[in-house]
Every structure is written in C-alpha cells, then in structure tokens.
Image (tube, rainbow, N blue to C red; front, side, top):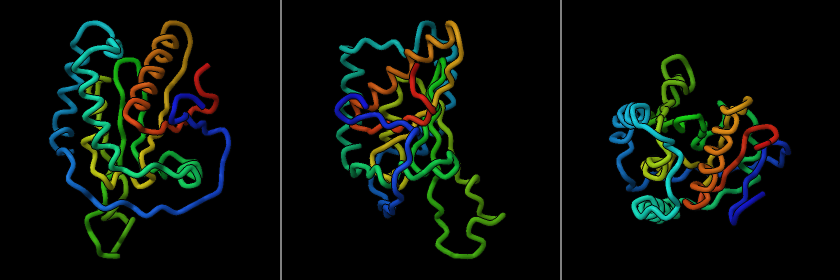
Length: 201
C-alpha cells in the first residue's frame, strides 16, 4: 500500500458486495475522445522521446490533472469489499488499464441502452459488443478518464491496472511507466487496484 489513496494487490481476496451502478451525469464527450484516440496514439508513435517523461512542475500537465480531479471527485469513493471480490478481467466493470512501453490502454464496457430483457447477454446483445478500448499517451490520461461516462464507474473511483514485466531494458521502461501512471492516478484521486500477481519487482 502506498500514497494517500493506497494501491491494492490482487494477492488476497475479500468478501463479496453489491454496489448499484451510478446514474449518468453530464461529463465531457466520451465519443469525441473515442474518435480521437486513434489519432492520439498515432501521434504518440510518431513523436520522439519518452511519452511517460513529463516534468512534474509542467504547468499544463498540472492544470490538466487538477481539472480532471475536480470532475472525477463527483464519483463516489470505492468499496474494497466490492471490487476486490472480482477476480476475472472480463468481469471487471470499471476502467481497466494496461500500461505498455509507449502508451496506456483503457478498456471499458458501455452500458446496455436496451432496457428489454429479451436476449440480454445473448448473441444479439453480447457484452463484447459494448467493449471499447482507448489507446492514449500519459499526457492524455487525465482527459481520457474524465471523459468516460459515469456508468463506467460502477465500483466507484477505482481502476484496475495491469502490466507486462519482462527482462532487461523493456522491464526498466515498463517499471518506470507503471510508477508514473500510478502517481498520476493518485494525483487524480483514483484508487489503483494492481492486477499483477506480485506487483512491481
């Protein structure tokens, strides 16, 4: 556990619980961000330097985090009894982040707008069809999370984070990216649920 919010590992399970999904609210346009995500990722691929290396005192970076935190504070704090009871990635309903060498992938499931019970979860209304993935740079992470619809946060203000630790320079790069991502999420007031079995080495 670290930082004022704490980072929780997947090593231990706790009791199950139920948290009702929050109602949608007026938040920045998610669909606009989704349309731009491809361009953001392409821009990151073409840019030089480390996309995870942002000076802590950069004024625009600080302003972006502060603005996003104000909006994200509208989302209730999470309950550990709820989200630590989820052990399979496909069952995780909140944002699921994968930290990679050059980007951060954000996976969410959009709400099923069809209120009918007909074929719910069936072939015509699969959960996979509501799956959306954003590929963003660290600099776009505050805006990306702030732009998600409120019903993408049924467990409250918590995200799952996963990363692939290998060896050599790749390992060093990813470790740095994960640490910077954790700190950014902490600055945004978001609890981090670390889904790697042992955490950072």
